[in-house]
Length: 301
Image 1 (spheres, rainbow, N blue to C red):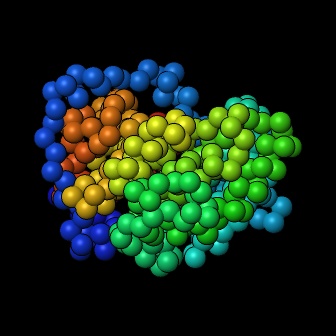
Image 2 (image 1 turned 180 degrees about the vertical axis):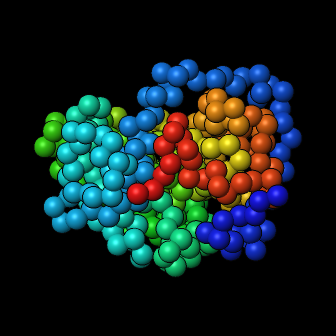
């Protein structure tokens, strides 16, 4: 029995970690396993999500080791954050992918404010100034919403500049843990402000639940392609609890104990091959799985 990481201790105190899920035979039968080439295709995004933990200097360079240098040729555009009240972030262009990359720092347990954000489980509407036209039925985790709002306009400006500088039409958002939650909110925010010809993609790792059923439905239908990758018995993806009204969008890929990567269709697939079924409560989770490895890559600088 392995207890939750301190990052989510407050969530546990509120009882949000309990999940009631009965595996569905139909859901299990519809699960497919990714090939090695499909798994390897995520590797550049895994490195970018890991690099989100790194603090960029004024000259937009990083000096934290292999994780920061694993995508050669990357052209930084802008960066920001302080790792405390505002998560680190960066935007740049990846010539090998032909994409503008947006990356957000994951949860840093050495800073108190990110912990408070993660523990703020009250849901609220999205800011109509940042998210014009979004239905009032859509609600999201208030702490995640505040974290995304801190960087929203700066990220948008950087993305616009990178797109113009490189004639890019593809934007990919990445992140791990809290960074994945911010990236998911960016995946709703950025399409509202960028040209309709832009193609969007989001790749998140260890993504907690971010919003309600209406939010999950919106992401599935209007916010581009989402893949959220969960490692083995990572407890974070089952938080906050479903009984509080939180729902994962579709797009889960679950790394099994065998290291097979399984595609789990639907929202919160209840199969025991997927996170919701495999980790029915916090006491069956393992926080050491949260940082990976994801195809050999461990998150962090």
